[in-house]
Length: 477
Image (cartoon, rainbow, N blue to C red):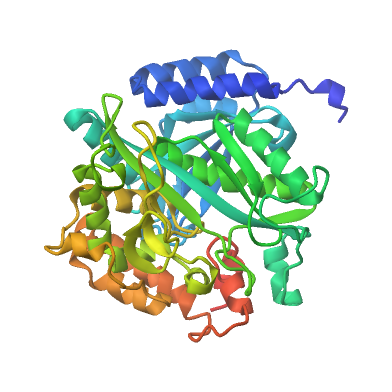
């Protein structure tokens, strides 16, 4: 068909940024859901150049799933969208497979047509039971509900900013090809901050950052990271649920841009031994009425007592939280002290081996940085768990002394699963069913991989990594 016959939506990047930032402001400003819903439905009805709406949701392990609905169908059936939950690992059983998909109209994004196709917009969805109740394994809904509860209680807002590292490898689908090749090929062997403006890594970073900016990320800086072919693109802090959505979009954007360049953006925590792995350092703070509750110019490291209690609660439950933050066999390779790994359950302003670091801050930017979190974690589960624990978790009687003690996170997924499963607090925070189901999923993946990791990356830990594998592989067992 001739392109001249098509007239699909294709918006310039500067206009995309304005539209997406305005939608983000509505969400941050708690504009009533009904108002936003009517506004979005009217827009979709009036904008004839939109052909389809991509609705996203995330499973229990953290995989992003996308369904494209014809726009006209969506307008007629927005309140009655269903899908087969038994086809999603960690969701419903075959005998009770049908689930609903409610649209979160606040989480609406206009897409760059050159990377997502013309005539499409994207919106996040809430997974629901057959009766419309929130589905327990939808951690996105749990995070949203917790954030709303804090806002309704006293106007508290939890802020997050994530520093997500990834690798850029030669060739499309390099992770799936690992089964045949047994190795990854770097596109660049430069170093920290170092790459020429026209080299492959820099072109990828520039392009992905442009797409992120257009989608309202409010970018701050981007650069190559320490390891060869490693990258990081930073953006401004935002409300917790928005921040978790942006993690999913960040990885989606990077993978899409890399694929267009005949490369692969990989978020495996440790795809190559001998070099630094990928982390997802997560900066957290809490505000009320635009006042940062973590700031105190007279407090230790300029943090308030409220902030130190938040830190102490995280350290109290540090080993029990580990599986939610490091969810794969491969992620335990990253917790290696030889490569700036944050494997110690302590807090420090300078020691990058600490689970929690206290960055230099001021009244606006005072925060804590949780370093022991991998980019393949379910972002909604990870952020929900960190916030709920920091605000409401148990507090050890000797909590202040834990900040500098040498205690270590589990160094393998089996120990992490055991501590997670046995934790009364995790069962209180997430629910018995979710803890049991999540632990079973993690053990199923672990049992496909060698228990003793050794120094060489094994094929199985790549192929059965939850962000890489597909249903075809799992049906072989």
